[in-house]
Length: 354
Image 1: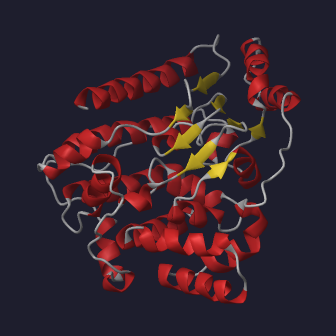
Image 2: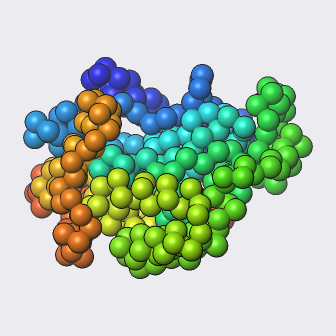
């Protein structure tokens, strides 16, 4: 398993170097990212990170995350178009490697999720930036419940910029590699030529935007759940009851941290969001306030009994002061906050993210 993390570490470093080098190369007009097999990217093998953290070596994972967050930042501020072809699973780190880019192409095979609260962690890789900018309070819904969105949902919510049937992807790629411009409008027009607006499924969250906005706009997790339960009394809807259950199964600490992150993310640039997320990640890896992430990843990814024992076990046991601690700098004279690289000569699209 350590080999897997090492390989991902190398891949992240190579991608970061690729993005830097291509910015200076006039022959490169855009970067196209796609996955292999069933996934664009379902995230990485985090077992070694949490194995080391359990042994007291939290910096093993922290160093890895610093590299990943730096790549997210470079992608978000990349001066040329990035086209991510999301023909499969897009979860966790896979979202960080795609959603920050200029163009995100979903298909009928796309599945998006940020499953971290169910694992005692929180949506990171810049999720507090991109989730907070989805329509209404869809970001809170997706980030807190770990719900899965298909390609049509992704397009409707803005996670995807285009929807292309998977059988047309070879033709799209052929058209894109012939492009001799970095003009976003020209590239968008090419992708649009192969795109269409898919039909939303009956169970799509988009048909429940009024309920989502009414419930997930509340100020606290407790109020969100209470409002959902009130909705459930008025109407029988399996979507409402399953949403309540997803929230009640998640780590209470993760839920409170994630809600605050997304809310504050609305007023922050992508760099500030990544720095805040990195601080929370370090605190969780240190296990000084709670060990929910160890418990969650163990129960879901290692033991696979899917029955984590959260501590604190309920929302009422977690105060605002408890949550504040996760947003503080690490008290370690040998450790520094995430230092993001300086960026210059950026297009308006990238500048807006700062």
